[in-house]
Each structure stands twice: as structure tokens, then as C-alpha cells.
Length: 313
Image (cartoon, rainbow, N blue to C red; front, top):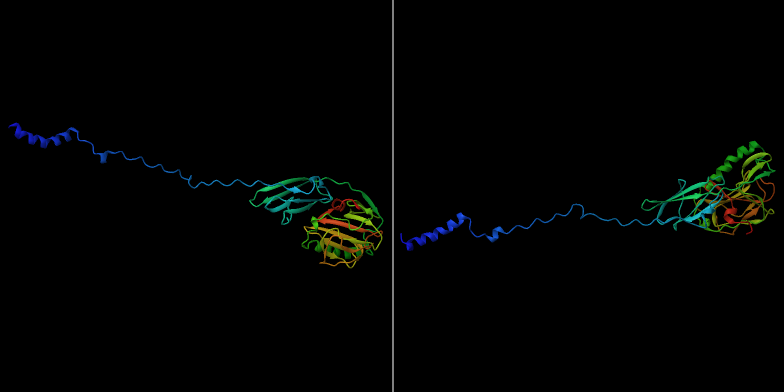
């Protein structure tokens, strides 16, 4: 076979030989490396939210100093912002719309009390209050234990109804801002009986004196120590209190005026500080004309001099 006749056959077989030898040029469209798979986001990171920092809890703010907390005394303060509940030793305490509140301590209150405010988000602010003890006298009173009752039997018969009226008056709910005011004395004169003194009536021990006695002539007018609402006006004298008047100053704080000769206001009357309420007398259990001024916050009996300051001052 001549070379001219062989060359066309060789040209036709050459591609087959190259494929068999593995020498075919690579196909660019086929051999480009595939891109790596995209990274998957970590589950949870996309939905993670960082809570805003909690608001700083404010402390209680008190009028004056906490050292004013003492047996027979009151404590005025302002609760932390957004307080939704306030307690004193676990008992609820009302809070005014401006955050103001009042708590008080009985003549026999313990040495410590715990004030707790629960704010809007459920957190709590606590305050430990030290209650300073008082010093109390013993007073001999030359008057019968049963007061104006004709006998012990008469006293036992009349007294329950009188106590029921007093209890009902103290449960009345009134609106008054008198508790915020600086109290004044209803009348000035000689102090003839001191708050907290142990009383002995003609040799028979009684309860401690729950108020302060001011000796002045019968018929002397007395006035409201602060704004309030009249919740009891005994037109028929009680055995012990005589003509009794109770004025509620709001927030559970009330004034009681005993042994009155005449009452010039009636139940439901709104009174303002300095308004005449009646006249001093000697009705009920009394040895002479005087005004007994008692203060009470809930069940705690308080010393008027710790709220109104020194008499005549």
C-alpha cells in the first residue's frame, strides 16, 4: 500500500487512539470544580433577643429620719416608683396615687418591723425599720373603773353596744388627706394624763392610757387637729368616753375626743384643720373637765405628742 493511500486511514483512526491513550483534552464545562455548599446559620441565633436591662429599683423615701419610728409614733414615706403592693409585717398598707403612705406603731410594738414594696415587674424592695421603745408612767386615777355606769352590772349591760358602735365607726372607709398634714393640738392647756401610762382606777388596774388628757375649763372649744370626716358622734354619753367624737383623717388614721360637753358636728360631716368641733366637758369616766385626745392607726394606739409635737409649741 502506498503512503498516499495509507494517510487517510491513519487520520481517521487517530482520535480513537488518543482516547484510548487518555490524551483527550479536558472539557471545561464539565470539569470546573463545584462551589462549596453555603454555610447553614446556627439554629437559634437568628431568633435570639437580648432583654432590656431591668430598671433600677428605687429605695423608700421617708419624711424626716427613720429614727422617728418609735412606739406610739407614725412614719410617713413615699414608696418606690410603680409600687403595686405594700405591706408592713405582712399586712397590706394603702398607697396614695403619688406613692405616699403612712404606717404607725403601737405603744407595745416590737423592736423591729419589715416594710416590703412589690413593684410592677414583681421585684421587691424591703426596708427593716427599728422601733425605739418608749418609757411609760403609772398613774393613779380616783374614779371608778366602770365610769358613769350605775353598777358593774349596768356597765356590763351597756358596754358591748358602745364598743360595737366604736368598732363600726373605725371600719368606715373615707377619703381624706388629713393624714398628710402637720397635726395641731385641738386645745392647749395643762397635761393631766400622759399617753401610755399604766392606769390604776381606785386600786383596780386598767389598760394603759390610750391618749393624752388636756385639763381646761368645761365649755372650752376644741378644734380639728387635721382635715377629716366625722365617723362617730355619740349624742348619748358612753359609760367611759362620755360624749365621744371620732374623726377619720384617711389611710386608717383617726382622732378620738372623749368626755365632751357638747358636739357641734355630726356623722358624715367633712371637717378642716382648725374647725371647731365641740366643747370640753367631764362626761363619762372623768374626775374633772378635760379633753382626752386619742389617735389610732388601725389597731395601733398612738401618742399625740409624737405627731403634733410639744403642746403649745
